[in-house]
Image (cartoon, rainbow, N blue to C red; front, side):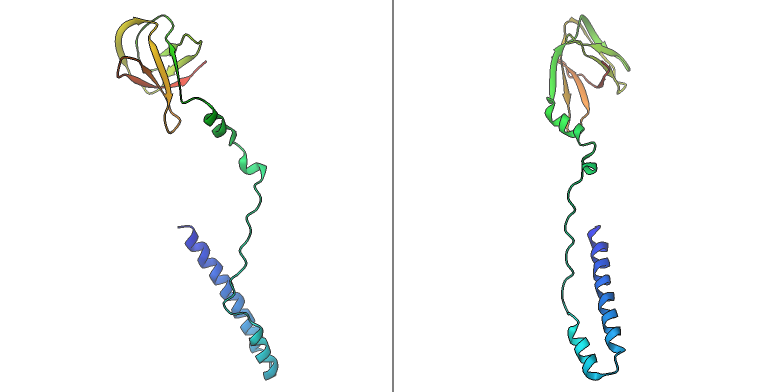
Length: 146
């Protein structure tokens, strides 16, 4: 959609340049000179396409995060340290690997009391992290705290 206004702008600029050349030729009094001037006007020549500017470092600023996410695994699996019986909004869950995750979506889950419950934290297509408890259908949107 943005290409249409740009192409119209380029076409109008070319038309204006042609009009200026024609107006210049029109002011000549000598017929031979005027004819030579009209013949010198190039008809149907497309304007030169501007070459793409080389990529500068500023344009890539902030791309490190995307590259870093591509290098990260899509999911991790661990166990909850100690007893686990679910979560509520804002709960923090400490995993056996030392990571601490906070529930950020306001969901609640009451699960049977278990010890060292196996959990998986997965990143979806949009980069959102979800904690899933193995053996249940419960999942929660989480953010790493520690």
